[in-house]
Amino acid sequence: MTNTVNTKPERYRKPDNAQKYDTKIKTAGLRNISHFLELSALKRALANIRGNSVLDAPCGTGRIDLLLRERFPKVVGLDSSEAMLAVYREMDNTRAGFLGDIFRLPFQQDSFDWVVCHRLFHHFNTDELRLSLLKSIAQVSKNGIVFYSWVKTPLAHRESSRRVTVNLHHIEKLINEAGLVLESVHYAFWPFQPKAMMVCRKR
Image (tube, rainbow, N blue to C red; front, side, top):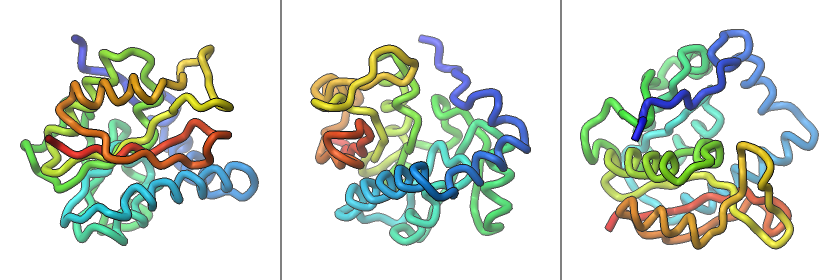
């Protein structure tokens, strides 16, 4: 298996584009509504989770940082783009942001109580990469992981792009193979959107 994967599009490795990305996710309109729905799903996913530390990987420019800080005393971000991390740190100089490969995390086993992986799993279109991702982030977590996925619903499915929807039973199979148990699924806007947050605990 080849684990070194460019998990960040080349355009987000440029400082100007990283700044534009951060601005884009804060704009009004439909994009803002979509962001609100995603955060609402994440809030529901985190409602019954307790812990002192969380790894936000990939953290990007800090899309979910404030939400995580409301629930965890220690939040650590990791991203494969130095440009994105520069914006992440600029927004708050107390943020701990590390440059790294999510498939080869620079942390020891069980370093964090939880790992949150927002907006990455859905970019991978092979089970090899999906499973590798789940195993990698699970390894550095004591309790479990929360990750964002695109799940096939009766009204939302995509087969013709790189970001494809995946059947929930198939995702659960990968979760089990990674040594995790699927505890709950929180959709952003069922059944009209495929976006969902998966809460998985370690066995």
